[in-house]
Length: 430
Ligand SMILES: [Zn+2]
Image: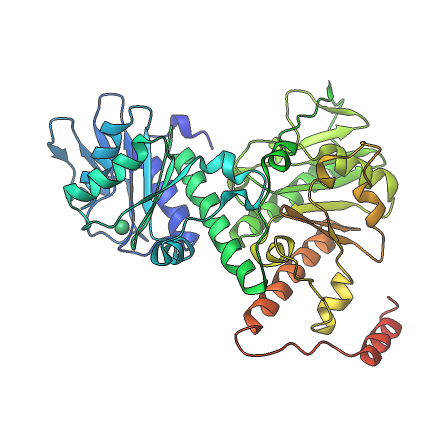
C-alpha cells in the first residue's frame, strides 16, 4: 500500500483502524491528525465510534480556524494545533490510550526503549508531560513544550500517549513500537529484573549487509507457492502480535541454496508476494533489499539440510524471558515440551556477529532437537522442516510463555516430572 497517494481522510481511517484493531484505543478514546500543505489540519471527529469511522467522518480545520465536515473536530484539537505550531517539522500526530502505556502513565514512568535494538531509533526521544485538563489550552501548552525539546513521543501523565512524525505512518510506527516496549516491560517485570542495552550493544544492530544482485530467469510454481504461504503467515503473525509493522523476518527454502526472505523496510501488514526477496547463493533478487538477517538465514540453511523455514519474531511473552534472567522451561504441558524442547538463551548480539571468528555462531546452537533459540534482548529464532511447523513452534512458544507469566498471579508452577518426561520422550521418539 502506497501511503503517499492516499487522501488524508483515507490515511487517517487506515491508521485508526489499525490502532483500534490492535487494541490500542477504545471507541471513545484517542485522536489522529495530519497537517496538510495549505496549513489545514485533518482530524478525527468528536464523539464518533472509533471502531466504525468512515472517510467522510474526518473533519478538516482550515488555518483560519473554520472547520469543514459533518462533525465537530476532536475535543483534543487544541493540543494538536499547539504541537504543529511548536514544531514545523511535524506533519502528523497520533494520540491514544493503549492499556500498557496507560500503566506507565498512571505509575508516572517512561518505558525504556533500550530494551530491544531498534526501538530507540524508531520512537525517538520519549518525553513526559505533566497532567492537565483534557481539551484545555493548558494541556496544549504542556505537551507542546515537551515536543519543543525535540522529543518524538510524549507520555501524558495520568492520561496516555502522543507520538508525532513526518507522516501518519511514521507517528503510528512510533506508537506501535513504544506500546510494544511497554507490553514487554510489564511482562518482564513479573519475571525479574529487566536488562536494557548499552549504546555499544545498540550500535551492533546497525550493521549493513551488501549482496550482489541477480535477475532470476523464471519463477517456478514451487517458488510462487512458497511466496503465497510466507505472506499468509506473516499477515497472520502481525494480527497475532508475533511481529510488528517494522520487525520480524520470515524465510523459506525453495531448494538447496535458494530461499525466499521478507524484505527490509516494508510494513509487515501490507507485504505482498512480489515484495519477498529471492536469495540464490550470495546474491539477492535484483532491485530488492532483503532483511538484514539474511546472512544468518543463509548459514542456518547451509548447515542444516532438514531446515526449510526460519522465523525471527518478537512476541512479548517469550521475549520477556529474553530481557530478564528468568529461564523458560517448556515442561508445562506435553504439547509445549514436544514442540519446543529446551530453548537456549543466547547472549545479546550473536545474531549480528555471523562470520566473526571470535564469537560462536548461532548455527552452533541449532539442531533437530533444539529447533528454537532465544536471543537476549532481541528476538526468538524458530526453525522447522516446513513453514507450518516453524509457525506452530512460534505460536506454542508464545502461548506457553503467556501461560507461565499469567500463572504467577495464582501460584507456583509445578512442571511435568522426570518420569513423565521420559515417558513422553519414548512415546513421541524425541
Ligand atoms: Zn486522550
